Amino acid sequence: MLDASRAPIELHAEAGAEIVIGDDVRIEGGASLEAVKSIIVGRGARLRAWCKVIDNHFHIPSDRTARPPSAPVVIGEEADVGERAIVLPGAQLGPGVWLDAGVVIARRVPAGMLLAGSPPRIVKRVLA
Amino acid sequence: MARLRRLVHLLRTDPTGFREGAIGRARARLLFRGHDVGPGIAVLGAMHLSIDGQLRLGARVIFLRGVIPTDLVVHSGGKMEIGENTLVNYGCSIEATQEVRLGARCMLASLVRIADSDGRRSGPVIIGDDVWIAHGAFIAPGVRIGNGAVVAAGSVVMDDVPAGTMAMGNPARTMPLSMAAPTRVGGPAAADSDTG
Image (cartoon, rainbow over all chains, first blue to last red):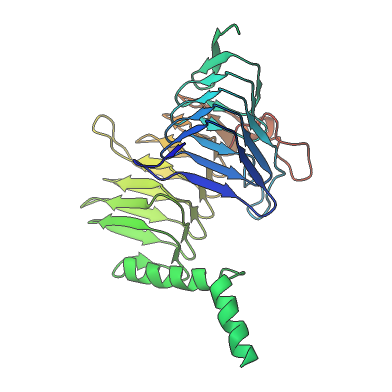
């Protein structure tokens, strides 16, 4: 379900890119997904307001005209991406991962972790 | 006739962005009339302006299109300056009560917020040349950012950022750019870099 009643949702897949959204995913207003290569959102995941998911940094510091390679992003089943959280290229969130509000992540996160803070720390491990 | 049809097709599909650029430059001329702005400025998307102070834009400053309008606010007695060839993505909010200065060739990603006063703190915000500020970063009043620095996505920058360094986190800490930038062209995928 895409709920854009309060703010627009941005889904941007460039030519040749894919954004795959599974069953029962909920995306709130202000969320933005931008794929240059691949973003996969697992079944039942929740993307909260104003979160951002990108698979490319779009720029590199030294050269304004160059664009870096993409690193596919995977958001696992039943994962929860908090408000204003930012999921960066190469991030792979396992099933049931919770990102607290404002977390910025660019790594693989094992299933069931709750991450909070910036830079993020593991707060809790939820046993399956 | 065929030539005319081709021209219409090119204008409609706009593969080179010619039409978008022309409309953007016309919109910029309209929006910024009466202000000290250089040539070639383009406003490609929606924008909210409230300029009661002094606004100066260098040549070829570009405001990109997106899902949220960009806000520029200059209060009476305030001064805002944006250097040439600086790129501002959608949904940015820049507010000057005293002074906000952005250098040349900077890149501001979406939803960046810069203000020189927040009711508690105040002080001019001075940002150098070739600075890249990533998505959703917040630059606090009084902060100075040196040339070529990078501010990572979602950072809350409360202290000065030296030239050539990268700031990340909340509150943002800085590290040398050479340690923080694995996203070289042709290099390995950016598995653990933290810009945006």
